[in-house]
Length: 428
Ligand code: KE4
View 1 (cartoon, rainbow, N blue to C red):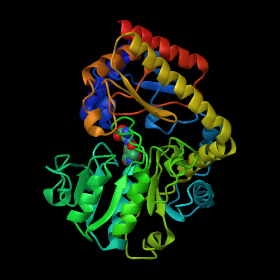
View 2 (view 1 turned 120 degrees about the horizontal axis):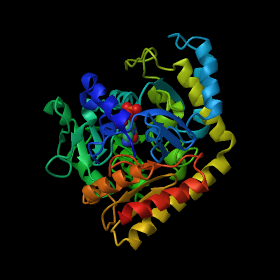
View 3 (view 1 turned 30 degrees about the vertical axis):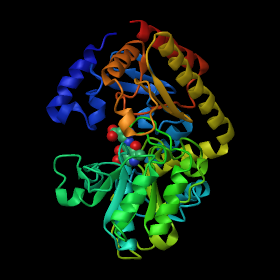
View 4 (view 1 turned 180 degrees about the vertical axis):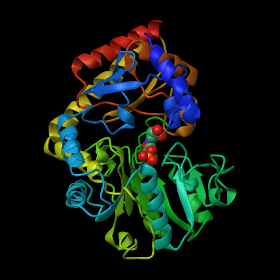
C-alpha cells in the first residue's frame, strides 16, 4: 500500500505540531507505522491522500455514527454557513437541539453547550464542587474524561488515597484533590467515602468504559454508585461523551436506567462538529452564571454550524431509532464475533468486549472487567494486528485501549471484508 504522500505530509506536519498531530493518539505511537493523511471520507470509508480506501472502524472517535458526509448533516451545515458561521449571540437553533437532547436524557433538566468533552466534564466538576461545598473528586482507573488538570490523575498507592499526577504540569496540589479507584469495585468506593467523610464533591464515571478499551459495568455497579453518592451527599456525574446516542438513543442512562445529578455529552451530539454538553438537575444548573455564582463561558459555545450538524444528526437518530440501533447492533455483533472467531482459529488469545456498536478486541485471555486486567493485553500483538488490518484496508482505532465504532453506513459487505481482512492479518 503506497503512502508516499502521507509520509511527506507527516514530515511537514512535524514542523508545526508536536508529533505532527493535533491530538496525541493520532500519531500511531501505540501501534507503529505511518498515519495516513485523509483527503475525504464518505459513508463507511476513509480515502487517504495516496488514493487508498479504508473501512473506517473508529468514526472520528465516535461522532460519525451515521457515516461520513451524511447528506442531511452536510446540507444543514452548508445552509447554516451561508448565514455566517458564528454570531456570539443567541439563536433558536440552540434550543432546537436542547429540546431534542432533553427528550432523550430526562436527567438533563437544563444544560449548557461547550466546544469539547473536556470543557463539559471540567465545568460539571466545578459546578459539583460549588453546590456541594466539597473539594474531592472520585474518578476511575481507565476512565478518561478529557485533559483538565484534575482529571489527568493516576491512582495513588492504595485504595482511597489521593491521586498522583498523570501528566507533567499537573501540580500535586491539584492531583491530591482527585481519588482514582478501580472500576467495577463498589467496596473501593465505600472505603473512599469512609476515609473522606463529607469531603467528596462528586464521582465522575464513564458508565461503559471506552478509554481503556470497552469495559461494561458489572451488574448492579452503576446503581450501587447512585445509592452510595446519594447516601453520602456527593453528586453523581455520568460522562456520556462517548456513550451518549451511541449505545442507545438515551445512552447508558437509558440502557442502565441511571438518574445522574449531572451528566455530559459530546461527539455524536455535534455530528462531527465541536460540541460538548453538560447538564442535569435544574437546582444545580441554575447556580451557573449569569444566574448563579459558578462562572463558565465560551466564545463558540452553541456555535450555529455545530448546532445545525448536531440537530441534523440527532433528528435522524430520533426519527429512525428503531432501524438505526437494530442495524448497528447486528452489524457490530457480526464484525466483533467474526474477527474473534478468526483469532480463535489462529490460536490467538483475544477477549472481545462489546456494548452495542462500541467494542474492543483485547489481546489477552481475559476476562477484562477493569483497567488492571485490560493492561495485561499484549499491546505489541495489537500493534501488529492494527498495522496488518490497515494494510488490508481496515482502519481500527490506533490503540489497544480505545474502542472501535460501527456506523449506520457500514454494509454487510463491509462486515465480511473486515472479517476477511482479519483472517489475512492473523495469517501474516
Ligand atoms: P474531548 O475534549 O476530546 O472532546 O472529549 C474528552 C472526552 C471526555 N469523555 C470521554 C468519555 C471521552 O471519551 C473523551 C474523549 N475521547 C477520546 C478518545 N477516546 C478523544 C480522542 C482524542 O483524544 O483524540
